[in-house]
Length: 328
Image 1 (tube, one colour):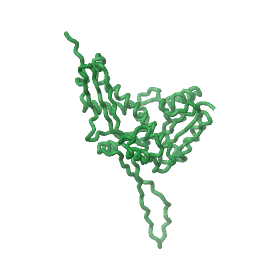
Image 2 (cartoon, rainbow, N blue to C red):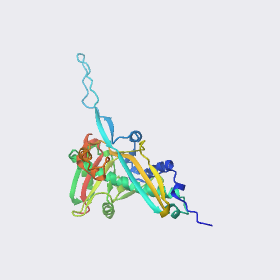
Image 3 (cartoon, helix red, strand yellow):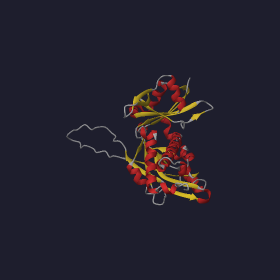
Image 4 (cartoon, helix red, strand yellow):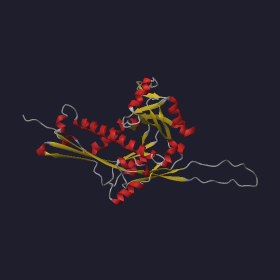
């Protein structure tokens, strides 16, 4: 009896695969799990509307002082003002090709295996995009008040506490710290990592000074000077939205029969936006107009401070950048 080879076309239903991959990507993300990145239903809807940027208006806080009442003067009314935040839409794509890929996955559910592999890749790619975005917003002069430069000394409690003080009395909103694995290992050597239980009661979540620790080797490090970058985050400070614009085909499969090769094409439209920092696209738009950049920003464009500007009060940003060495 001839071998029965399962092909990608036999196991992938594009409509189902797309949502499976998006959901699984979010589930696997440590940034989502930690509460730093949160899904925004409004953004999900706006992503499907097309365009290159998304306007996100919000209200400013109330200002002024109370008025002492008297019989002769009326109570004066202040107005509430708004600010405009702009997020940039990401349109990204990736293709994979393999010789009899589905057949190689025989013995397990091919669909589940493929989704798992694709989702893990997109999770890593989202973290690369977020790292480029963080580099860009902190390269903007408007964010200078949220940079704690301790690049001459090693990581230690005093250094981190000085960083959180950048938010003053709003520092209690900080809940997590993202760091390079070398920084994490140094803190383990100092015996300062404390593990707490997860929802199942398993003591597996690392914390430092009560901040949840997220370890990512995509965190910036200058190998010449030995200076590392860590970030302190408030919960929900990064808004995430996923959608499918009408003109975008999210998932396609194809096969080169002569070469016995399967192809999987995956396209995504999404937003990963730090709240309170507006995408201006100043440098990027000039490059697009000159024909030297694609219509949607690359990671190098996201990492350019000329494309960002803070629009919210410093205390409401919820992200602090800390530069440091591993040891003094």
